[in-house]
Image (cartoon, rainbow, N blue to C red; front, top):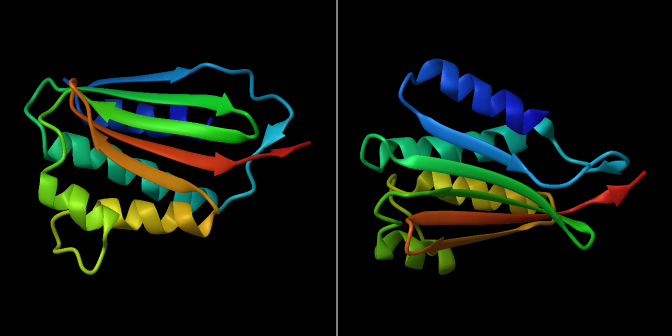
Length: 137
């Protein structure tokens, strides 16, 4: 529900935004014990990053899947990808300038929840994959 609400908010704010959400699993009975406000901030940061740092009409795809006992959330776009300096700073974060700070915040939020983040460039553009442990009900 959180992902759908975030997507709806962005679509309501940006008329020409090409944003889609793919939830490929029935998540009934599976919970994620997390701070909803922090997770919302992380997802919003990723979407905003795609909007701010890519050309107009860039497509953004959010995918939520179950992988074993973990949630896997990816936010990918069809822009030019992450600058190499940002990828290096996220991998070895001695310090980030204000450019890339939102991505560093995503890493911190996910780390606080026992998860991991992977930032990469693909042939299609930039992609962040978040893995978070779930708890069965």
